[in-house]
Image (cartoon, chains in turn yellow, purple):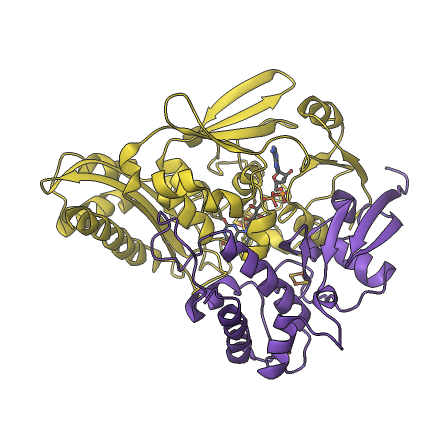
Length: 329
Length: 178
Ligand SMILES: Cc1cc2nc3c(=O)[nH]c(=O)nc-3n(C[C@H](O)[C@H](O)[C@H](O)COP(=O)(O)OP(=O)(O)OC[C@H]3O[C@@H](n4cnc5c(N)ncnc54)[C@H](O)[C@@H]3O)c2cc1C
Ligand code: SF4
Ligand code: FES
Ligand code: FES
């Protein structure tokens, strides 16, 4: 691990003034950053510890949504009664991620900013455009099982690893950030980036910008929501594919639906094509199948990740059917 | 290039206070093992993947490898050695012995700390991935399925899993949490 200077921020303005000079990194739970320091992926000159900033709490907003502090541990967010009762798929997504120990350490903001688990990104002996712009991409002609199928470029084919981000994408969450130019609110759809010709940036944050919290707008029918993760073992593994869904049905018709897919793209993928096709139509397995087919029509697969298409189709249909059957009970 | 910095770190470990001057790169795990010679805490992967280094900090289980000790200044750390002594075993330790829930024993301190953290989480009503309905805020029952899921961050190369689960189930029954 390269030497670095360690400083601890007492306030948000402290944190901002301590960072941005040279190569600095914020430390929250450390579950991704410390790993990357040890692997040599990240080599900052200064670590700004933000873990003791007063950025906790899950609170109801005036309009009936929720505001979640950047430092709320994943374990606490998953256990929060408001989250469990109003947005069950947020809780389910968190509980499908990592282990009890890691969830107790991992913060909400850190979860959004965790970096890809692409094996070449993690192995500093191999070329990777995300680690080292211009180096090349080892995954394109390499081990391709986990590669993206939507929105990948000839520069990077990695997928975003977070589970939490899928329900947040489905809910149109808003990321609250602060920086040297003041505060701004970033809609979730604009927060993460596709790789394009610059895969080294995962998000649209500018250097030293600090996440202070996440806001989830009210969506009363999200009480009927579910997250399902398909993986190589029953627990403690990243997703091959995953599905976050919420649906509002009555009289066999879809009034509204939210759908986000994981394991498919460089960012949490909101399935808007499928949503549009389903809205105001029948809530049947055939309709769900046709909608996910339409969503995946643009997908591009190789020989090792073609399995993702049927896996996603079946998972989406199963999750939506389960939710609809629950509604009819 | 920053000059070699040292940070003062205070840790309370199993009830004993320690003052350390550390390189900021040192993890809690390395501080415990290399500086304080508390070797019951094990290093497996050093990347958060095996759970061998699990300790309790302020009562919550964490993997001590993915930490910077500097960030844990002032923390109250409990290791497996702090949960009982050879003459006076804690209930989890005794259950592991009774059920032969250890072969080489390397993963055992982490398993025991993780189990202790898990009991506290269940008592606080925290759901898990196998909880049928997360919106149900009722009491958590530590069934064998719940125990397996909640302990899944701890890997055991000897494959003593069945015995580990039985040992924890015994304790869950004794404590009225099963
Ligand atoms: C073994 C293992 C298995 C895992 N499995 C899963 C899984 O299945 N699913 C899943 O979703 N995740 C998984 N994770 C990832 C884990 O959830 C993330 O590492 C964690 O959420 C990151 O949060 P943190 O607080 O520890 O972040 P840190 O490591 O502290 O920080 C991560 C990044 O975010 C930046 N950062 C942190 N907070 C802020 C802020 N407020 N403002 C600006 N920048 C900030 C840091 O500078 C750093 O770049 C796993 C991790 C491990 C180690
Ligand atoms: S897919 Fe992206 S992260 Fe993986 S090696 Fe290629 S450039 Fe790097
Ligand atoms: S040594 Fe910490 S989890 Fe493996
Ligand atoms: S008893 Fe040997 S690793 Fe678990």
